[in-house]
Image (cartoon, rainbow, N blue to C red):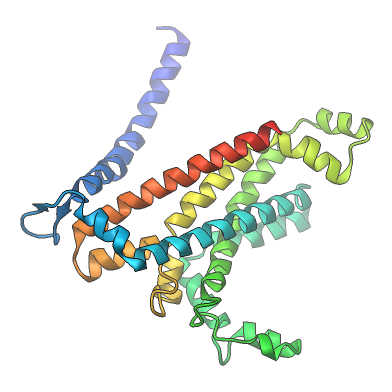
Length: 292
């Protein structure tokens, strides 16, 4: 047997267990969820086929539209917050110095913390009486800016998005550093000879070279924001009055609080559809940006 064929066979055999696990625990449940979205089912007993009734009820429910709006706010804040900050930090921390390694570790640290711990920490930061956020504003003489951050419907969704973004910058920082390190030094030398420095070099040389990485990080932001759940459950529980409800918490509440597994399956399918639409729009926009 040729060495190349033996190598490919070994790779396929090595990947087979992971592939079987992925199919068993992700793909198969995904299709089962889509299937039960057409049924009225409480988790036990026989499931009653009702066609598109779950989807019709979902589209008539104002809480679903509020959850979708909140998720879109979270998607926008993630794309405009996580990606630029991670890219800026990657550019600043590209050199492999001791200081850069310490800052990289500090930025990545929230990723290894439990989301429950992060939610509890930021819940205390936002506390209206003894929270650090209001205390800092009072110290700066901005008492008029203090508020109940998590119970005020005008600001609580934006307040919730900050810890979610903060805890997810680390992985994108590592991805951008790896992409920047893969740019050949000769390209930087040629740009310097041509007089491209600073912002001109960034937008004319660096960004085009790592544009595919930027697209991937945006896709990860979209998918991650649409399945955000833990932080919101810990900090607000989706309240008050569903003002911080997300699609994932909406699905959870309808599935496990009132035992509507068929309806919850329909919501999970809708999340997949919305995610696919947003990723498709992103692909169209970023493809044009890459050509520009």
